[in-house]
Length: 203
Image (tube, rainbow, N blue to C red):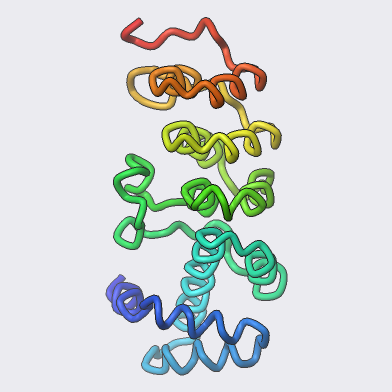
């Protein structure tokens, strides 16, 4: 919608930092929302903008591995865990194809974050029922293709399946790991129950 696109254009990194600076107070946060969205004409538009801001802050939290902030957004502000990062705002666009066409789920964003900062966020999100099976499978695929074995281990431990086709060529996560000579991911997948007899369309 035009209004949403206009507001997305205003949500710069600086603006998001402004929202982060007032997360200690629900009242100050709402004041900041109303100040930035003062031209919106209806309560529905204001509520939609608030949800969008909270969704972007969730993605910012997993990008930086800030688990405390992530939990506060969820527990105190009821931030929408199902918010998808729009493709045009997705800094992982090339790496996340084709997932980015519909936008990245928060779980997918978490596994694309720097490995050194985000394992706890991945663990926190991996078992949440709000994410679809497709989201979870995409997270496994992104962990394998990005050589993020630490995240892959967390996903497997959470019970996410490892036997599925990652692409149109019927490559499984295990086959993708093998194609990349990623021994650590292969070991994790096999221990997690990956089918070693699975064959892609190329054999």
